[in-house]
Structures are given as C-alpha cells and as structure tokens.
Image (cartoon, rainbow, N blue to C red; front, side, top):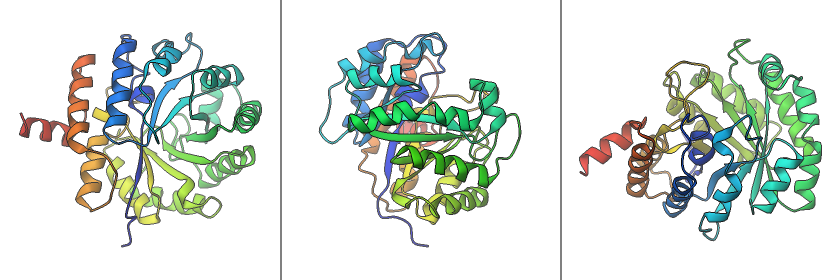
Length: 301
C-alpha cells in the first residue's frame, strides 16, 4: 500500500468542537486554545464561526477570538460563514479562509435550513463571489456524505452532485464529512474514489466522526485512496447531536498517534497536543474522548 508521506490536519476543536457545549466557554479560553494548537504545529485551525448568535450562542464572540489570537506565520485561521453578513464579519476579523457548508441529504437540508440542497448552495453564490473578490481562500464542507439521521445512507451520486455545484462556485478545498459517523471503510473508499474522479486528491479532505468507532478505520481507507487532508478535534471535542451521548469528531491525538506510528509526517508535536487536550478538557469540566491522549497523559504524569 502506498500511503502519503505527509498529511495536513485541520484542527476544528475551537469551532466544531466547542459549538455544542451548553455552558459558555470564556473567550480567553477559546483564544488560548487556538494559540496552543497553532504552537503545537497545526497549519490550519478552524478558529471561529460567524453565524447568528441566536442559532449558535457559543460562537457569539468570534470577532473577539479572532482579534485576541497571536497569529503565527504560515497558519491559516478559518471561519465558518453561512451568508454574506457572516463573510463580511469574518473578513473584518481577519480570517484567512472562509467555510461554506451544504448537506448531501435532501431530508437533512430541509430539516435544518428549510430548503433544498440546490437552494442552499445557491445562497452561497454571493459569499463565493465576495471571497474571490477579497482573495480569501474558500472551503466547502459537505455534511451527511455517508449517511443522514433522517433518510439513512447517502447515495454517492448525490455527494458528487454537491461537489460539482461547489466546484462551480470556485471552492478550493472540499470537506467530505461523515457528520453522524456511520461510514465504514469500504463505503468511505468508494465515495472518495468517486469524488477524486472530478476533484484533485490534494483538494479533498476527510472529516470523520467517531460515533460508531469507525473514524480511524475510515481515515486509513481514505489514506489508501490517496487523500492526505483530514479534520480532527483535540480531546475529541464535539458530541454528535443525532446520537445521544455519542462522541462526535475524531480525537486529534488518536489520529496523530496513528499517523506517526505509520511514519507519516504531520508537523504536529504530539506531547504538546496531549497537554492541550488535557488542559481544555479540564477547562470545560469533561473527561477527554481521546484514548491515545488519555494513555499518553497518564504515562507521563
């Protein structure tokens, strides 16, 4: 098997990881988390979300977080932007990359944003145009790519259709997201092979949730296809809102431990990462969801 020599990890804990926390995480803690992750070696940190505070109150301080972080050279600080207003706020806050998002499931799209997949992507046209005009990197996230809580398995053709629509908008990197974590390795490989027929491998990212314990296996399957960009969340922050009590995002420590064990370069300092995972878990008063993080922390204390 020919695995990539190096992998880019996008750390999503400050945004995707914290957004479902019920208790408000202090702004200073969010800033510290972004700073620690950048110092640990991440090239890309999803730092904030510019959505309506009415929908996601946890992310209401995005402009303060972006203003407070120490910006390291070469690090891309991303922000989620659902509309033009969100984009303008992200631009003003100094985001290096904006993220738009659509579902590959009609049922999910209708239930979450009350419109079809096609209509949802249509809404991003002004955001995409503004991003290109401002020369800001545009990323597109495709949720429910391997399954939906309402309609079950997602057809590969539907995902490919959303990818093509986002490609037409000028999206530069495509996140193929298993939002509810139901994917298994062969299904993951088949989906990514289909996407790779229309998008270069260096523009495809795997975003796997560990709800059913399949995330590392799916990452391995994606590596085998040639994908070398993955999303993860330190300490496994971010539950799955569609599966009660389940873990959501795959834990970064587990991913890095596996990749380093395979001789794949990440640029991440695993010791710093483990310390950061232990620190943020303590800050929010929850045990870590990372098995490697817990084992390494206990081994070194």
